[in-house]
Amino acid sequence: MSRNKYRIGILSMQGATEEHAGQLRDLGHEPILIKNKEMLENVDGLIIPGGESTAIWRLMKKNKLIEAVQQFAQLKKPIFGTCAGLVLLGKSQVETEEPVSLKLMDIKVKRNGFGRQKDSFEANLDVKGIKEAYPAVFIRAPYIESVGENVEVLAAYDNKIVAAREDNLLVAAFHPELTDDNRFLELFLSMVGEKSVLMI
Amino acid sequence: MTDRVTGTERVKRGMAQMQKGGVIMDVVNKEQAKIAEEAGAVAVMALEKVPSDIRAAGGVARMADVSIVEEVMEAVSIPVMAKVRIGHIVEARVLESLGVDYIDESEVLTPADDLFHLDKKPFTVPFVCGCRDLGEAARRIGEGASMLRTKGEPGTGNIVEAVRHLREVQSQVRRIVHMNEDELMTEAKNLGAPFEILLQIKEAGRLPVVNFAAGGVATPADAALMMELGADGVFVGSGIFKSKNPEKFARSIVEATTYYQDYQKIGELSKDLGEAMKGIDMKTLRPEDRMQDRSF
Image (cartoon, rainbow over all chains, first blue to last red; front, side, top):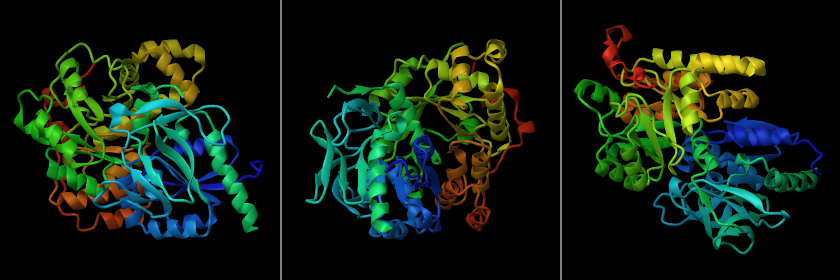
């Protein structure tokens, strides 16, 4: 399945876009930096990268990308959110007056749940579907406080959910794009593979 | 599952990678911090005076009053940075203990040490440092800086030095990448740069840390220009809160940084902005007032 070459959009308002692009290229796929809604029409999947969720949100709002990404999700095309991307995909957030949320995935998110930069950390993580421990990099990371019934929990650290999947949506509180380990991205690409078979 | 490790090179550099393509704004109180966050800043730099006011005030410029830093940290959810004087170990440890997300060891403040920068590696908090050329950039990385910013000339609203410094660093990086490895040691000597850092640059094809542009950005077009020239993002100091309409300047500079090659959009963003900060011609600046020359 992963022999196929996919066109994967990376939402490029701000954040670690080039890191995702590099990993996709390493695996033989074509990254496309998405800045306008028209560009979403030609991609098989979308990555919402790490960055500052409030900054990304405001730029999306200003540039009509919120509805566009919601429509993309309704087409059942796969979306992978890392860190800020996880925050944005979640339906609700703990203790936030004005949630920055695409309201797509049935998870409740605690922004900066693991604390400020001084608490940013690396740890080896057991991830469902990945055989050996995954080197996870958490930066001012959120966690998932609770999930809906259709959400599959893929990883937890310190009893906090840090990776999950619901249908076409995949999220990680950590940053696979900051490591040389492509296994988490492969999980996403296999979802892209499943969905593109269904769509043909 | 092993225990967590904090303060690693990867989480320190990674934090800056999350800021890429964004705008970091100088703020002096919580009201300004909220305006910055609302406008889409990726971080704020909490300080007592913006650089143009530091210039006007003269005297010794130090780390901001701790209460200002705390006030800003409480007001916003985006990362908060703060400046320390070059070489001031204790100011840096104080800011670290407050929990600021990034420390700028900055030439905008009056240096505390006129020979040595901080040894930044033992800190958990990451550091950003200024540079005018690859020698400075590589020395700062060697000392443990996790992020760089080309210096420009702070508080002038004049982009010319920012352009010069970014072009210089970029062109020197390109030279290193195309050199043979046997030429690197002499180049290290000539640049005053650690050999190992140059080797890393050659192997990776780029700087090993994120490099923002700073020192003179005053308009959306200025910010887009720095992105066009290859900056990973921009710092805006006096340019926002010394303009006539800070909210609008802040929003427009953020958007121009993301859409730096969409010239029609930058045109729109530049409409009816009101007056930008008053700039300073470099020729009128006395040598002792040049902040960029304060480092070693």
